[in-house]
Length: 95
Image (tube, rainbow, N blue to C red; front, side, top):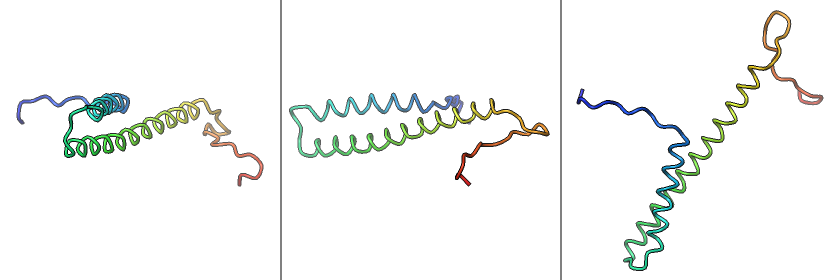
């Protein structure tokens, strides 16, 4: 081992906040008056990569929230005969 402690893994929400701050900074750089064409391309690339990552993180956060809601609903679900969970209830025409 190198003697360094492993850092605790971050959360999706922390990643979302970090990415948003980075995008704000990149946006400020894009608005800077004095830029070479190379600088402009680098900022554009950074922003496009950051936006793609931000969208993915937001999608994951949304899926996590939906999964958590489903898990909570499943915990509240009444038990059927024999102590088993009854499963989802399907309406007419669902089968």
